[in-house]
Image (cartoon, rainbow, N blue to C red; front, top):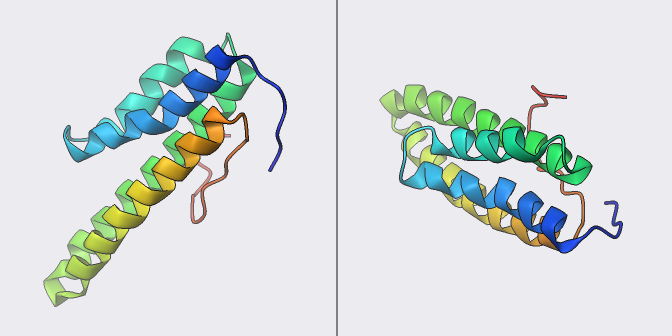
Length: 117
């Protein structure tokens, strides 16, 4: 994990890339749309925000794929446990990523598929 000195605005926007994903708990697909909006607005202004925005979107797209898999597996009742666990893990990792980004630390999500490089 790399830590460099960034200005407070850059760290705040990096944090918001991660926190905006929590809108997915309220708005369908908000977990991808939120980071996408912030990434699109600030990617040219701050390299840190561009990196953390891509990382957040990659993780949230991965979570969507895992949720779809859980929905399919819910036919066998195993999927319900997967969906609940995935929601909790997603919430916890998003909060951790937000705190790290606010501290100026590049955060990498575990089990994230790198769609956007």
